[in-house]
Image 1 (cartoon, one colour):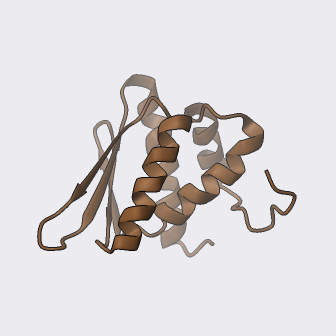
Image 2 (spheres, one colour):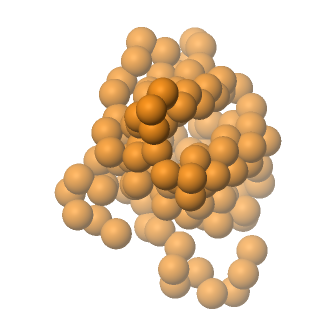
Length: 125
């Protein structure tokens, strides 16, 4: 972790709690990890709650597709109990990311992704 944490996001208590329940990386490394998640999730055009998780919709640019892919690759290591699915719609339609879980992992998953996206809607950095 770097010494300069000024650019790392401060998370609402509910999001921080969800992260603590879902994330398997050491607590000291979580802030930097969540900073990269926040950057990508805040780019989503929309988010919908699923019975077992969430689905985020993004613009279909190549840069966004790369960012979403990199997010999934990194998240597989720290939130290994989640299932990730990326869909690229035909004719350059939207890119969707489904993040799903089972059992006790569902509430923290929803709290994390819905909470981050909600901060975007409410104008928080």
